Length: 197
Ligand SMILES: Cc1cc2nc3c(=O)[nH]c(=O)nc-3n(C[C@H](O)[C@H](O)[C@H](O)COP(=O)(O)O)c2cc1C
Image (cartoon, rainbow, N blue to C red):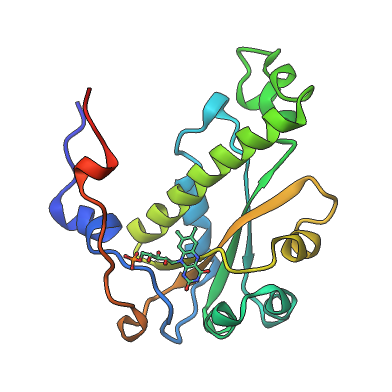
């Protein structure tokens, strides 16, 4: 049986982790970005469908391509971050099902006849994988700054051309500068969030 992770680990991934708006001027090498994906990809998705698709915007040229689509409040901080991951999903994720869900070769037919069902599934599981991404980055010693303030169709056209990829949110990645962290906001309490029936 698995044991609870130690208190320090829990603090690092959730309890004390913060959303970062400012990052230290310290490069995040590709060799640290890859393990985020290698870790997040192990989180569960329905029918193992793994719809998330991620573009790490890291070079100055790529950042210039992203810049016009960022909301005013998110522009400067995103341009200054070492990297910004575009967390998206593949609307045709089901093409991989014969390989990633091999024991049921008809699984693809659950989705390829219904674009609406495919999109709901891609968004649901892509969002989960986005959350796994944040937790994985934190677990690996990095900080994140998720953002939804951007022009989605603009980013999709620029970074997911062809129409089968859709972005969900952006997530800056780096070593957080505590001076840019906002005041901690209140969380709902257990009774407002959950009940045990
Ligand atoms: C999906 C998502 C979208 C967000 N969009 C923005 C955004 O566009 N701009 C921004 O400054 N913060 C954004 N945030 C940051 C949230 O306001 C922040 O995570 C929340 O207040 C909790 O902060 P904490 O993690 O420091 O407690 C976003 C967070 C998430 C998870």
